[in-house]
Amino acid sequence: MKPITNKEQQVTYLKERLEIFLEVLDAIDPETTEIEDIDRLIQMMDDLEEKMDQFQSREEK
Image (tube, rainbow, N blue to C red):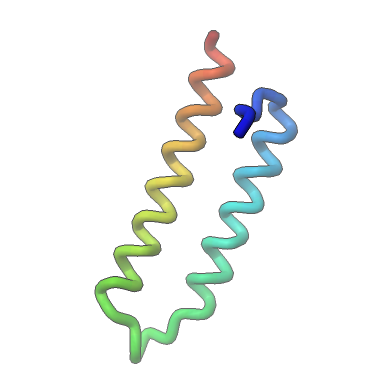
């Protein structure tokens, strides 16, 4: 996949990923949530943070 270098596209990508995260978070039932569900949420946030770092490093070059 071709890297996203356009700042506007980067922001759009991050917003879409954050929206997906929020939808998943909203759908979780606290009464039935298991550790694996929490681990998946943490992984989603880690992935989002990694992507933000990648975008930021591209801007610095």
